[in-house]
Amino acid sequence: MSDVRTMPLPDGLDGLRLDVALSRLFGLSRTAAADLVEGGAVTLDGREATKSERVRGGTVVEVALPGAPEPVAPPERVAGLIIVYDDDDLVVVDKPVGVAAHPSPGWTGPTVVGGLAAAGYRIATSGAAERQGVVHRLDVGTTGLMVVAKSERAYSVLKDAFRQRDVDKRYAALVQGHPDPTRGTIDAPIDRHPTHDYKWAVVAGGKPSVTHYETVEAFRAATLLDVRLETGRTHQIRVHLSAVHHPCVGDLTYGADPTLAARLQLDRQWLHAQALAFAHPRDRRPLEFTSPPPPDLQHALDLLAEGA
Image (cartoon, rainbow, N blue to C red; front, top):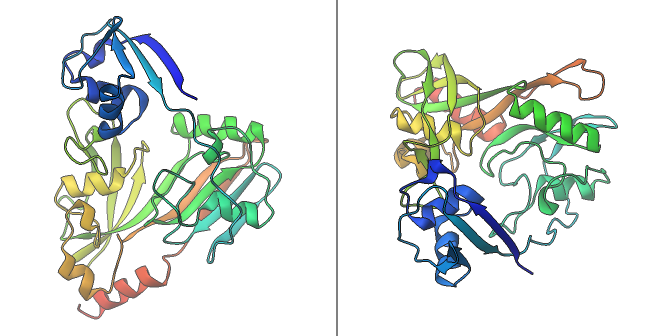
C-alpha cells in the first residue's frame, strides 16, 4: 500500500531538479526519486511531472510513496556484540565491525537490533518499524559505542538529546597525513553526493555539519585524532576528513590510499566510537562510557609505531 503525501514545496528547494528536490524532501536516494517520477507517482499542481524539470517553491507536490517496509530484524546472535550497560530504560553496546545498527534496503547481514532481540532484550517500539529503539547509528564499518532505548520515554528523551546536541560523542580516527592545524574545526554543510547516491559530500546548501578534531599522536604516514561531533550527519567524520584531504586510513569510499591500508592490514576505515556521555533519560544522572580500539585497529597502530 502506498503512502500519498501532498504538500507545497518549501522555498528552499526552489530551482532544483524535481528528483533532487524529492530526495531532500523525503530522504530518498535520487534514483528512487527519479523512479517515482518516471512511474507516474508524482504530480506538480495536479499535472504529471518529469524528473529533470526545475521546481518552484509553493508548487503543490503529490507523491505516492511506497508503503513502509515490514520489520526485517529477526533475532540473530551477533558475535562480538558487547553489552556495556543495561537498565530498564536503555542499553549501551560496543558494536563490532560488519554489523549494521538496524535493517535497511540491500543489507542482509547482522544488526544491533536483531542481536539485542536474540539476546532477549526488549527495546522501545517507537521509531520506524525496522529501527525501533535506535536513537543514533554507526556505519557498518565503524566500531564502538551505541545506545539503544528500551522504554518509550527513554526513546523520546534520548532522541531529543541527540537533536539538541546534548550528547557528547567522541571518536578515534586514524587519518592519512598530518592535519594542519593539529587541532581545529571543520564547519561544512553535508548532503548526498551529487552523482553517487551511496556517498555523501560537502555540498553548498547541505545540512549544517560541524566536526572538531585534535591530534593525539602523529606517525610517519598518518595521524591519530580525537574527534568530537557537534552534529550527527550520515558519514560526517568520513566526509569532513576527506574534504580536508585527510581521509580515514582504509576508507576507500572517500579517497583513502589503498596501499597504506594494505600495509596496515586494514580492510575498513580506521574509525571507532570511543566515548559516549549523556544524562540518563529518567533521573538525569550523568552516564559516561569508553571503549578501546578493537584488535584490527590496534594492530594498525602497532604497525605504525614500528615504522610501517
